[in-house]
Length: 145
Image (cartoon, rainbow, N blue to C red):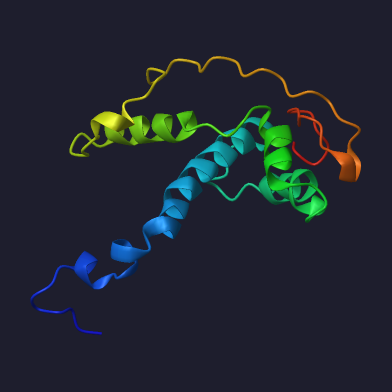
């Protein structure tokens, strides 16, 4: 594949012109990934060194339900709150602080100052569990530490 010599890469991406709708999935994916990583760090520890608890924890607390629980309900039960952009903003602020040359867009300014604890999220109501629902996962949840 050879780049077109007269057009920028984005000009060749037709979906950006007439069908940009699916592109939002990239942004939403970054938000979900940051939320899940933050919660998994709480319940299973850091994953950077190949922590085997991550697989065990995600299998037990997320993957085992398959399609039996709607994704929004499953995520709310696991996270303990609706999905939020805050973990992603904290991660961007951390990266910017570590890399002075990194450019931080004004919109990426964290709502919670770097190093400060985020406000506690309200606990999700407990449900019957199983296919009918999922309870909030605690740090002591089986398969998570």
